[in-house]
Image 1 (tube, one colour):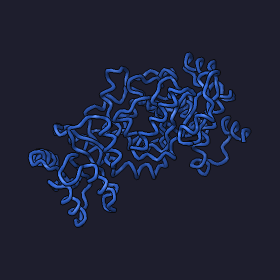
Image 2: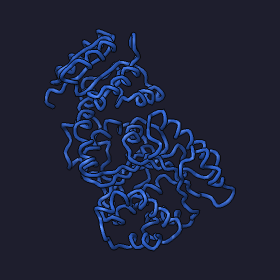
Image 3: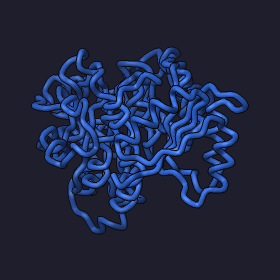
Image 4: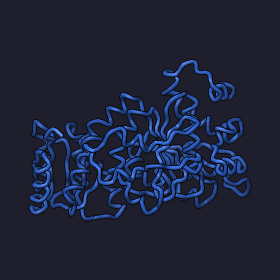
Amino acid sequence: MANEHILLVDDSEITIFKLKAALTRLGYVVTAQTNPVAALSWLDKTAVPPDLIISDVNMPEMIGYDFVRAVRLMPATAKTPVIMLTTMQDIEDKIAGLQAGADDYLSKNVTPTELNLRVSALLSRSQKTEDALIESGAKTITVFSLRGGVGTTTTAVNIAISLAQLWEIDVCLWDMNLSGGHCGLFLNLKSKKTPVILNGFSAQDMDDSLIESMLLKHETGIKLLPAPDSAAEAELVSSQTVDLMWPYLGTHFPYLVIDAGNHFTEPVLSILDRSDIILLTLAPDLASVKSATDALEIFSRMDIDLNKVVPVVNSVFAEHRLPTSKIIPVLRNRPVVELPHDPGGFVQAILTGKPLVATAPKSDAGLALISLAYRLSTKAMAGKKKNLSNPLQELMRKAK
């Protein structure tokens, strides 16, 4: 920390006093404003924009969401990280804040320790991670659904392996299905350490060896970052954990594939917001299609570009399914990818811990998964990895 400058906006003088004192003790330079309109005027005139903004939600003259939107329209602060300060804990309120352009939330009753962790992590993400991702060319592919049993983990595992073997690169598979992660089961890997060990850590506590101690190397070439060992530990993985992990993952892996499970949680919202591609998995049935449309609606409210959302229809059953032609219009006419029905292959893969693309790459489902990985990556990788000769590349050449 090099005396980063923080703008604090809150109409409560008590909150201003408490937070300013805490932030000053932590070494930050703090400018305090009790009126959002006055704060915007100050931002428009100052020669030294803040490195981070903390804003209340409920304020006179201008609500916090509108203040953040105005901040995002100002060139000097368009990318400045913003934390919303609130007593509200409802997920709808958090989505509204993210949609307005906020990066994180803090409770007004935040402890000095958590305040330091959240602020330092967000500053680190802002100052380091974006540049690191640009320099490394890292791509984040997140697999998500609002409905279980539609192949989210299967898709994530097989896409990660396909990318690693297609382009002969390091790929990290991150299991963020916090309450029931099964990537380790699908790969026959048992975790030794998980991201819960970072609970309470700050950016200053981080070093590469911490994350490397969690990574599990699989025989296919990918590295697994496992989910917590139990649902009881799920609460220990937060959006702060994501902030702490992101710089390392962005600089050490050309591709990061994330199994984000099937619930909107704070860390998952943080990951979805940063993802380059979102694979939205669903089965060809009414309930699953409804869940997918609900997810698209929330993505829109979060200002996630729907052009980066790819619906993946997994044919988990052969009969009595909705035809894809009926599904596409409901999903806002998004182009969809279909995974063929292959219950025997997928079940065998789960039972043996040997993923389908590793054991049966020429099967219809295996080819579909490899082709999807190829389509998602070929534009970025073809120029960097010319004239590769490996089994998956040969499959793709024959498929053209």
